[in-house]
Image (tube, rainbow, N blue to C red; front, side):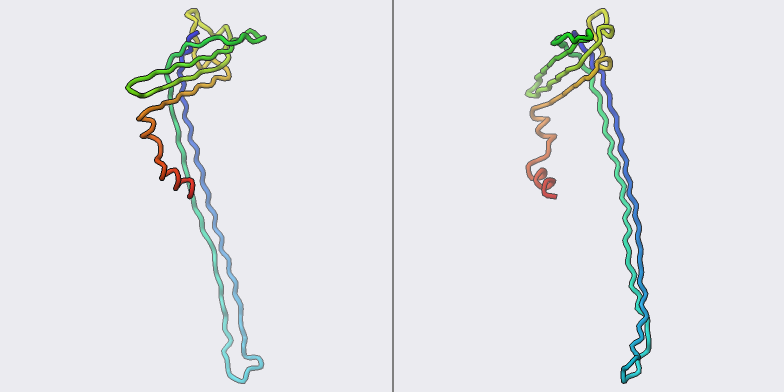
Length: 150
């Protein structure tokens, strides 16, 4: 059975925090009691506070369009079919692998024995790339160390 993978995902997460706090203490001192010298009474003020404002935003998106031939690995008691498939493509030392698993209703399979991935329940699609481009896109050893450290 051929699965036509047409998947798009978009996610945005926004967070914001704002806090503000202030406090103060006022103390009046009268040091004239019992002293042989003339001292003028005074006031001491202590003030403090903090202010925090932070915002953050993360946006992710992606799409995957492919076709993969799968095997029916199990016929479930309710008549649905469990599918599994793997496809590996190597071009110029780069390796891309697509792994697909899921469960499909027989009524969602068209007459050409194909089904869209959006009609597959419990679909799990893994797309992995390996090779010199994948290596160049990953962080270096020192960068990973400093990210771990801090």
